[in-house]
Image 1 (cartoon, rainbow, N blue to C red):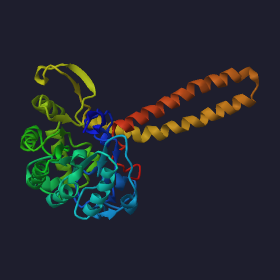
Image 2 (image 1 turned 45 degrees about the vertical axis):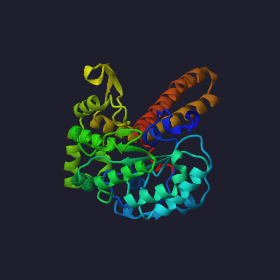
Image 3 (image 1 turned 90 degrees about the vertical axis):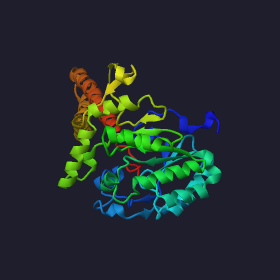
Length: 357
């Protein structure tokens, strides 16, 4: 594959799914893995697409996405992003992938992999292997931890088996260690455990916004979230960064990329580090976005009143009205623009959920 058309190696600056790909495709709603931190189920519940988290365990095919045609796109396609490749979805996933790949597209296949499903995909799509990269999520090698956070997903041993198999069949392979389900030491062990089967990159990221995405009304889940926050605090993340940053296969997810630059640090190879906002900072940012976006809209009403009044009022005072409008309009615009940036930074444009994909 020529570098000119290799979308896998393209530099991307987006957030969420846009860190990895330019387009995303899903053919279903719901996932039997039941991951406790799941972004897709959180957003579906938030926007009333499901009644409760239990409903998300029911996997429903979106047939219009299965039967439609797919054209060549200028960019990388990721599939799936809002569900996984389970036995229920497998035949339809394979069918859609064939149409996408036959059109000449390059595809990033993302999964907490079931071994039988990966064997089937490798067999059915062997002629397209130059257009495919597998990216398997492995956030820990500890089966107890994995079963707690990802109760319906394959255990780490099975995911490693899928990773090794895909690589042995000549496919390009990658791993996502987001979310990490452990602290720095466990993450290093996981990285070392998967590295030998990876031909591309190992992406490492924190568990993002667990107090929003995990049902912390349950005491056991609240304690688990508090433990994750301690294990993945700023100092621990800096230590992880210092240990892995020089590895040629490392790639840092947006949850670890820094937002404020510090000076060069010897522990980080003399490279400039950036300090990450704390969990409380991020939650405050989301709360601000919740309130400020609708709060900025009422500013448009006095703006309209001022403009209307200035038209029908005596010319003697028209300059006052237009002056007030001149001040209010940019203020309301800046407020709305800042809210948009907060929303974008908090990754609310997640895996197709807000767009109905």
